[in-house]
Length: 145
Image 1 (cartoon, rainbow, N blue to C red):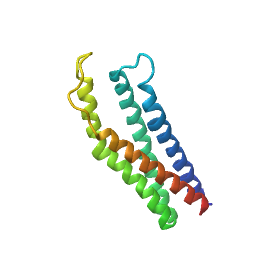
Image 2: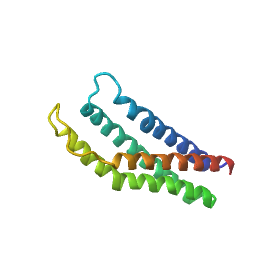
Image 3: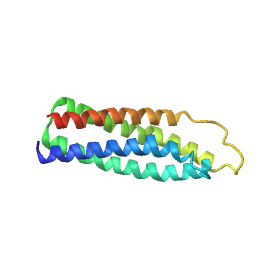
Image 4: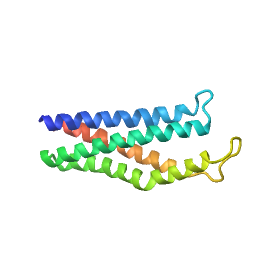
């Protein structure tokens, strides 16, 4: 295994761990903690996901550079391309809708509820699942190669 491949494996599994920990453990649990209101949970979530997405973008850029330099198999490129496209869709199409929804919820007076629910959260989770599978596949393929 080359040094570049080793770095890509490390990044892939670190990225995978961050998505699993934040999206599938921290995010749902924070709303069950005592004293955490919807507004507080959304405020925390916005900051956490902004940070996560920033790190993911850096990880994606590093992986792209490594893939361009290393020229791995088509399967490896495809796996990481799926993860990166999923991230791009989240950032470009889904996150703005989530931000719009959380702005509406945060703008409502305490005790009142925002008018409509958004389906954007389900799309975001769907793309998280796609990233999990793609990152796991890409990391395993790199290890096997």
